[in-house]
Image (cartoon, rainbow, N blue to C red):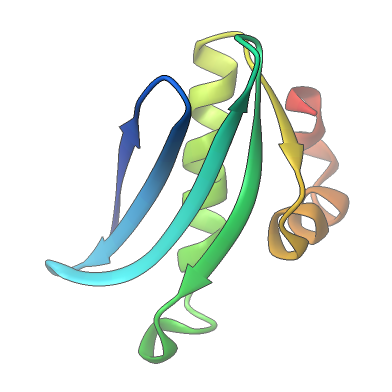
Amino acid sequence: MIDVKQNNDDKHGSFEASVEGKKAGLMTYTWAGEERFIIDHTEVEEEFNGKGVGKEMLLAAVDFARKNNKKIIPLCPFAKATFQKNPDLQDVL
């Protein structure tokens, strides 16, 4: 199971994924004002490539945005591509 934990401060934040306590990935973001945040980087540890880790972190970001009435600007190529492939997530763009 993929566990995703959010870290957030006034300027930056991240979603950290782990599998059975082992670091699996990291998605970082930067706040762009109070209503939007920019996903600027996504990385997945090599041994977890292709196992849905990146998408789980993105889904956590979308969930956070929906619950807090925020919008996402996906500058990271992975996040941008995932939003394009999933119209059901685009309400937070």
